[in-house]
Image (cartoon, rainbow over all chains, first blue to last red; front, side, top):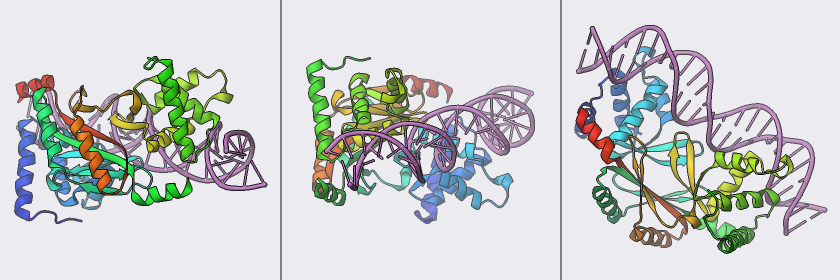
Length: 161
Length: 161
DNA sequence: GTAACTGCAAAGACTTTGCAATCCC
DNA sequence: GGGATTGCAAAGTCTTTGCAGTTAC
């Protein structure tokens, strides 16, 4: 699952994140850096609980491994900074997206079986950014989810009814 | 909080919901009817846990009061049928919207303080419906959330930094 | 009659909190 | 040095599940 970016871009992105944290007056603690660095390796989508375990696996000893609460807190910070956003709930978990890796895309979700279809619609981004500007919010990100019944489930339901 | 609809419209909506349940081959059990009827009285937005308690308060005896799991299950069904959808997470809870009462509107959410600004953008609905049609999903609903920093929090952060 | 549905109680899971110790700036 | 941040362990919630009994159709 790693290797989504070549090393140069990854470094640049990492520096950008740290910069934004500094601007915001946040301290660059060892734990936060660990979370950021692992996120850069992890992939486009993640669930916090998986991330906690993944980081834990890859830390030699407990001393250098950020705790579960810290991972949660750091992800929340990264969300405020606009690098990460929740995109859907799978069962009890929340699936997050690492925005710089994903491009602007949306999900069409089947409410019966959970199947996902991804699509892009650049118009929507410009509309929502304009709305934010109009009411003087600082735009960070947006998230659109369309729910429906996928072709397969649809057939199944119509068959029944 | 009640009285969002005049009685005539409420009855019509109630019948529409029951009709859709029948079409779908669902049984109209006493518990499901109780959930639907209370939802019709409750308001535009709700959290399932509140709904459970609210219904419980208003049931004379335990016998005629749908259980917590049944409320959860019924809300999930109503979501599949397109009458209800989750619109945001507040802390650990999910806030739902009773779609027939709300019109097509979206939320601009402040990630610092949680302040909400509501707006409408009819264009977006037509875009997403078209996407669903194109890939042969049965469209049920969609949900757009824009995240940012509200003017107040923005000022506060800029003051700090 | 029978498949669908409910209620119960408990489990399961994710997420948050309080507070003392620690660390960055 | 001092305030921000962490870790620990535990609590707190929301949500789901299994199963025996019940019910709508």
